[in-house]
Length: 36
Picture (cartoon, rainbow, N blue to C red):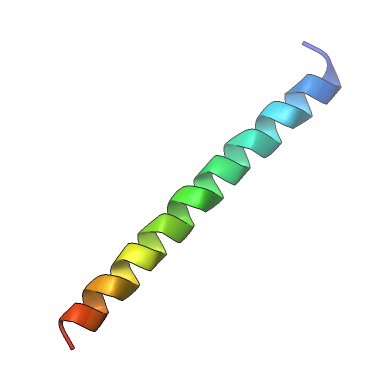
């Protein structure tokens, strides 16, 4: 595997993690608004 595809893979992984984190934060915010 060359460096470019390694980097692409790492960026894709990081983006996926970020998307999941945003999804969790959004869900948590909605939940806390329901309990207010």
